[in-house]
Image: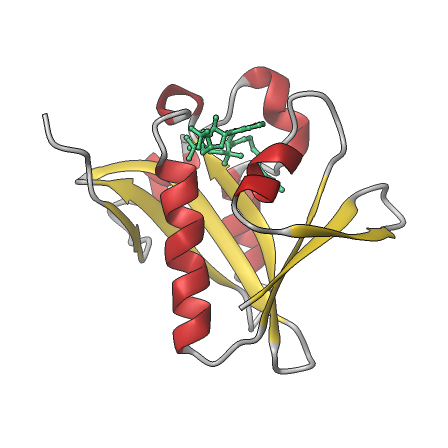
Length: 148
Ligand SMILES: CC(C)(COP(=O)(O)OP(=O)(O)OC[C@H]1O[C@@H](n2cnc3c(N)ncnc32)[C@H](O)[C@@H]1OP(=O)(O)O)[C@@H](O)C(=O)NCCC(=O)NCCS
């Protein structure tokens, strides 16, 4: 069997329900908002960009980001791979595609914040090249960044 091709695709009227039904494992539910909430929030944020993550023709995850006011950095606002599809390299591939897209658009810095907890995504992001900035947000989330 060949390795599925990962792509980031626009969400449409036909696919939105399938994307809203994607969920992380229950123990990870505190790490990311439900996709339906993220998509709703995006519609009230004029600069938010969101895409479904596909493996071949199957929707497997969701990614959403927003450019910062500085014009050079982008913040990874939401990112998840459905529990049934984790551990197959889709998350790594999706982040690589996202970073490559940002580079092509001329951005210089990718940033994110994560919930520091057992089983959380910190080690995943370190493996993708992000580094800790040492800053903590008011909600306890910790910041990471990657120079593009
Ligand atoms: C973080 C997440 C998107 C990773 O997606 P994934 O498709 O399972 O990741 P991949 O299969 O591409 O894993 C890539 C590598 O990271 C590792 N990895 C994945 N999740 C990890 C975790 N939580 N902790 C440590 N390592 C992790 C994998 O073992 C793999 O390592 P390898 O390169 O040595 O094989 C997924 O676990 C998820 O949706 N988590 C819940 C939601 C969440 O925390 N989102 C982030 C909000 S800031």
